Length: 149
Image (cartoon, rainbow, N blue to C red; front, side, top):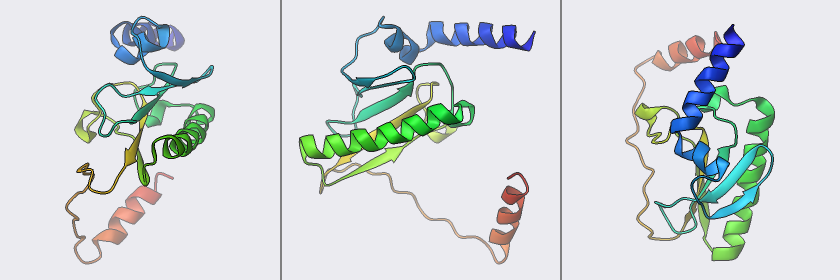
C-alpha cells in the first residue's frame, strides 16, 4: 500500500514539476550532460552566465530524499561541471549550493544543485549576517544534533 501511495505521489509531482518536464523532453533546455540518473543544463535565470543546474532524473524534493548513489553521482558531476566551466569561460571561482525547502530559497521543489561561476566584482552575493551563540549554547546545539546521528 505504501509503495502504491509513493508511486501516485511521484506521478502527481512529475505532472506539475518543471524539472520533470525537462527530463521527459517536454520542455527544452541547454543540456550540458546527461546519464541515467542525472541531467545537467544551463539555468535560464542565471546568477552569472554559465550557471548550471544538476538535477536528479527521478523526482526527489530535497537532499534528504535522494538515494546515496544518486547523491554521490551529483557531487562527482558537480566537480566535473565546475572544472569544465572554469576551463571554458575562465571564471576564477565557483559556488556549489543546494537550497532545500521554500524557507531556504528552493524555488522548484525538485532536488537540484547549482554550480555558479564567479568572477571578481560580479555582484553575486551569498553573504549572511553571522549570528552568535550565547554562552554554552553551542554545546546544546551540538548535543541535540549529535543525538540524531
